[in-house]
Image (cartoon, rainbow, N blue to C red; front, top):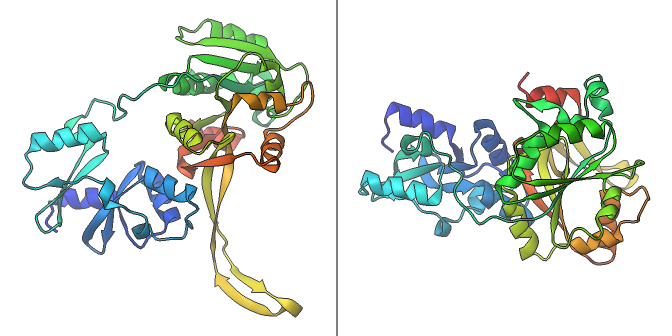
Length: 358
């Protein structure tokens, strides 16, 4: 490989070895704030890996400890050649909305990397895509007790993150993909929320519905039985997820799911040797400081409209109760994975302070 010094630093930042595990790759993507990495074998270029590749592997139940070299697929990737003129490479990056473009010589060696900012420093990498106008239900009736004393004054959905409230950020993310109708389940300090949102210069419609008593994480949605007739998103009011939710909708449709849960991939390294025992307490094996990976519920879901009739009216009912109900009757409850770094939850003070970079 032949690089200029700056290219070497750039490549070190955006590359990973083919022997690295899927979970290590997700962590690297989060650390460098990229959804795409170069895959190397030693110093030799092998391919590129994207967050989409990893999401598809996780959905296919590939072990997160598997090396990424086993899941890269060059048949779906495009690379520039060192014989290509600069305008052609610029067009390639634009048409693919690629974070960066590796340039290979005739021997398949990596000789340079151009990134989006080299050609489009002021333009968003997010391209045009077909909009989806699906209803969005936001569960905003809780008291936000874990964020006291702040929530003694204002309801949790109106807590600021930057120059906007968390509720505005959530709605604008859905508005960006085409969603124009929002139903907001309210209770605690709902009058403040309604007054604030009514002052906004917005391009979407909001309908509030009252949760007169605590009904769990999905119970109040029974009140929308005659108002929603197509698949709809449900979101907690205190989270941010760096994911285009149209990908979630595509996955939901392609797999004929009744419910799709957006899940975050978490990992934890146990700082001790873990012993496996068998009969009579005899040791069967020991693993030194293993890393455990699991998927957690982020608080965003996509539901088919007929499920509203399966939510009991006026009764305390959690989304987990609905998931289990659907699963037991043979329905499909799918999981769409995002990385740990793509998900932020401001439900408690440490997470909120992290979200606002304090």
